[in-house]
Length: 396
Image (cartoon, rainbow, N blue to C red; front, side, top):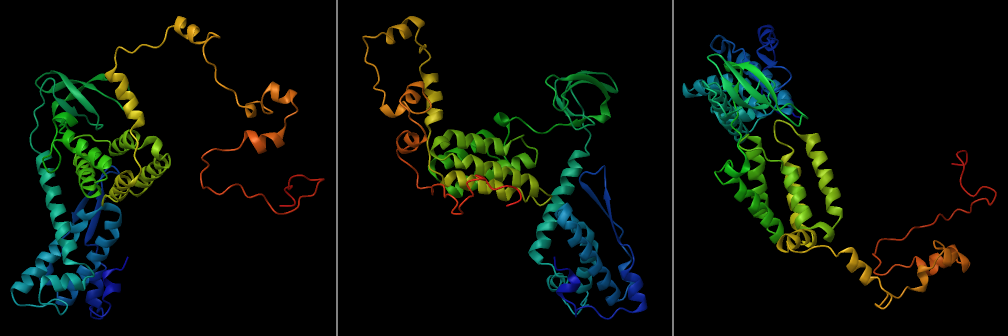
């Protein structure tokens, strides 16, 4: 990644002894809590006591840190350089210059950043702060209500006292919940809702969004299909409703494509694995979710398997034939299939009695009907020593 210094090497004045000291100050801290989502802490220096050059050098260092951490921890790193940008904006309002710039957008560009990126970071940071404020509001659990425990597991409140709560907690990989007791202030609200009563980030009913996404696969509607799968992705990301995006895509494949293109499932599995590998704070995995939706939209379609399921649902009176019926159908007076002669190849006792070996199998029994255009096996052209019918390790 190009850092601010590399992007604009001539925009920084030669470092004096004072500016070097400023540049070496540790003005940015990144506190990782429990190895989970980063919490950004910023030690704001006294900008007003600095010269223009000293301030700009400090901002260059903060920008370098922001670029470095943004690769790992997402766009909330905006908070690292926010104080300096606000100070620079105030300087420009007073008619002053910073690094030869007279406006905030020009100065942002001189740091090797783009104003639209900063605006995006500002919006994401504001949304994040707003969600944190909501989560810090007082939460009062109630009997029967869903809660999140200290371990982050879903639980249901079954009893309450003045300061404690008994809950049925669902542990990872468990089939039945276990009863545990927590202090009431240790429980948090569980806001995620099941799909049948939840709405998406843009206030669509989740079940409508799922249905619309599948219809787009069926109809080959790529533009709207990408819209709906994004809607479901962000709804899950914002914890509005637990939606397994890849499970949905695999269901779409099984119901709408299936036997029409068996290669699709392999590509879809690969996309799922790649999505897991690139998942980060900038939602890079969304790229493969969209790839998956576009793959399904463009594939040949067949609803044979799903139609088979629906047929049995629509014909509940259907019953398999009884043993008596099967015996009847097997009687000698009914027509019997004609067995082609090639059936009796070297794999059958009759074929072996007829002295049929590999030559008969390759010329007659193994001949394909409706053969694909995939290139046939290409035999090696090297003559192998009859004494050594296969290459040995040494010869390789």
